[in-house]
Length: 227
Image (cartoon, rainbow, N blue to C red; front, side, top):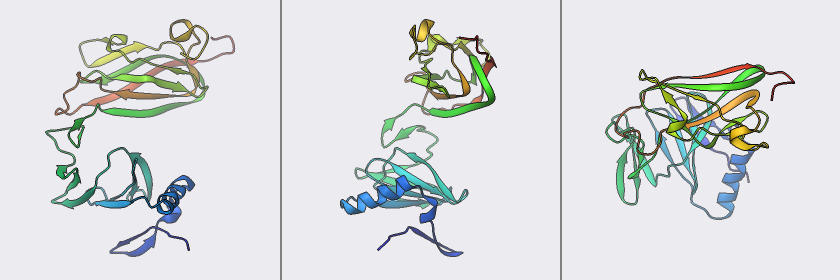
C-alpha cells in the first residue's frame, strides 16, 4: 500500500506527494520501514509545512506549491500563535525570528550564511569579488566553485580590502585543485561560479540585522589561450 502526503485546508484536501523528488520519497519510505520517528510542524507565517526527520527538516512551501531547501534545525514540537512560530527542544520553548537573538537556534549562535550561483552565457574568467554590506563576509573553506569543477576560497577577512564605505573587495585566488594550488594555479573560469558566503565568527553581532546590499563578480570573456 502506498502512503502519500496530503494537505487539508479551506480549499479541500489535496495530495502533495507528487511534488517531492525520488530522494525524498525514498527517505520517507526508509524512515517508515526502519521505525524512525517523523513528525511535522505547520508555520502559519509563511504557509510552510515542516517535515522533521532525524537529520534535517524538509519544507513544503504553499506559496510556490513545492518543496524548498531543507533546514538544519530539528524542532521536537511546534505551533504558530500571534503570527509567530514557536518550537520546543529539550523541554525549552523557543521563538523563531526573534529580533533580539538573530541566528541563534536552540541556544546556539550560528554565522549568517548565503549560497548562490552567478551564470553567464559563455565561459568567463572570474577576476574579483565585491561585497556591499555593513559587516564583513568571507567565503567558507573552499566555498567557491565553478562550472569546470574548480574550487577556491576567500576565507580570511584579510583577503578583502575595505574602502570605508561598505564595500569589501577581493581578487579571486586560483583554483586550489589545480597544479600550483590556490596561489599560482589555474584562473577560475566557467559558465557559472558558485559562492558560499558567511559572517565570520566574532565579526558580526547576532542581535544586529546584517544588511547585504549586493554582490558583484567581475569577469572577462575567456579564450583558449587564457590560463
